[in-house]
Image: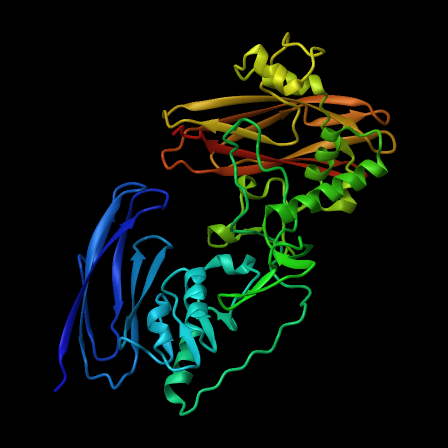
Length: 474
């Protein structure tokens, strides 16, 4: 006789949307089971509010060792969000289908290939499968970190939740299901590309948020890099560690050499340029679009369009940076003026400058930087931020540039003058940019750009504009 079981789960959801929202539950019960959720409607009055619910599953022990699965989806009323959670009814040890969250349970499964459901961290699942010493695994996952992940400690492949049910159905309906791995060669032209990696550093800068950071994006994921001889480069299983002179690795430490190499090449081509001029050339010629001509996506934010707080001015383009048209230059004294505005003591300033040549007679928070960020507090009032900028013509002669603005949503941006006329190379021209922007209760980050377009020429000089909530001190 089959026995019925009841399993009760308590869960808490936090609203991270941009304001009030209502969600309705939609249930797909696993075969042979009954599922109930209470309450079936969650009402959130504001961002970061929490709501609790209870899910009950009534299921039978008479499953013949089969796995059945369904889902709970919270659907936002009058909105675009759906929040899906898989529901699995399974024997204690399953031959083919598992959450893969216990190496002890996995080690009791028959030797073979396991299918790991999208129920937890991919890295934790990989560790569990490796420790269980199985033949391999098929990981069904929506974890965006895998796009920047470079190492497997066991044989495995990754498929999306969209393709997962077809694989599970094949396993459950075939007498002898089989799987094999074909090692992938280098594939060129992957789209969309590039994208902001999930691990990438993001702004605003805690040390000084009034200068927009980061500056730029550069390749940093799954890079073939030279490696130290006394640290293993790869691992098979839990104990076999392999050494190599090279390793495939991801991180900002991989992106930094790319950006530094571009800067070194620019210095070689233009030895008279200052570090600020080189940075300006890299930023103002960077590309904010991917190879589908859409805005670059952010892998760490569910593939939404990346903001300048994630990608800076965009992906570095070395060839365009050789001939930027205009540059935003800055002297060491300009940086000292910024430091002098930051309430450091004289001794602290000297520890940074390491010189008595500089003075604090003209402190200024407005560094001549090729980007703009305006910060707001939720006071319910409008703010005005004014920026002064000077650009230097590094083109081959006289040129005229016209301003083109894309305003951050809800803000008014003006630039004066909106036309810059240069009579000769290295001539300087100044302009003022003003942003009138409201505080926003949902703490939204909005962004746009200022582009100086050369008339009858080929140069475009782009600077990102960001309106962001002020960092909260902890």
